[in-house]
Length: 442
Image (cartoon, rainbow, N blue to C red; front, side):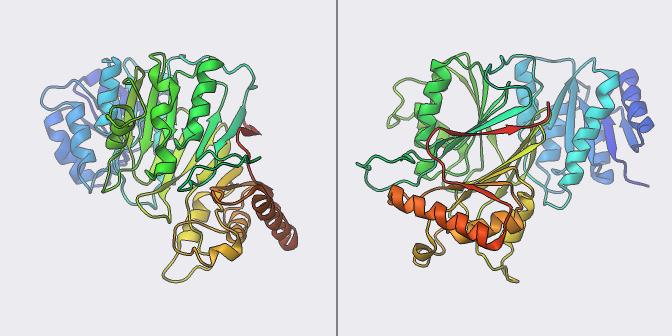
């Protein structure tokens, strides 16, 4: 028997047959299962690309199906759409917790149902070469809850660097044109706010959100890893203490520490800088390498980085633009049969509009810091231009011990290399609160 593209599980004959017919008319092969007790055996036998399941059914529920599929290594790559009349927020969260990729409320829109399913499957096809992943960050249905940022036009994206330096064992005494705050970058559209890392830079970002009353009710905070300079500011992020906000915390677990434990230490520990527990709703999304639809038309992709501990790099695609973030990533420079990281990362970031990448060391200093998990300027420039084919490069994770003059020289060296090699690449050494404006699709 030919394997179907989609299995629909619904005990309601009218809804189940309607879903099957809409998808079949669109060209997909579909199996309809009306007895939920038969769903798991049929899924194991046919291994579809996507499952569309109701929640409330006699026998086993759609939640049970989600959990069974996503906990089975042979099946967890299958995308799942949960369709239900139970539109309570807690029910949506439970669906996502058990591995659903999308929550669709009944009665669904017949005219957009096929395109919704197609978008999910297109994401599956784009990710076909990767191994099965753990339960994904959910695709969120937005209920017109965001107010617009008045200073951004339609289709505009603002990328702001709030901190980009490494952390020194001692607090710096000198002033710096580039600043001393550690990793934090925000990405804003008129409606949405995404934050990458929670180093000390996130403290000033939080103050600005509260003081300027930017009404991004949902804030996505993506942590690359749990080294102190990337999480130290999390407990001092002011929106976490305002009940008007929801914080969606995303990151990969490490064998030594889970994402949940990091959040608990930041917000609830006796040793935390936080004096009171958070008032915002905080959701935890533990991820592996995969593509995730955070919101309609906004995709977050992640792969592991060449850096000590379980470290991620991220690619955010929004409004037709690609923002690549790799603050801790050691580029090797020369690929061998035993090393394909540069090629893999280059393909992952291909054609990025802006690439923020580790360039912690000068070429000279790198000779004594190889295999520590950071890159030097020349290999970063070559990687950005040749393998990632990025438009703009932002040199990130500047060595905490470098003076402004040394950072100026790093930027000059990078620009000289770009000119000497004829690369079509813009290059920047960011200062704190420096923004880059991208014009995306309206």
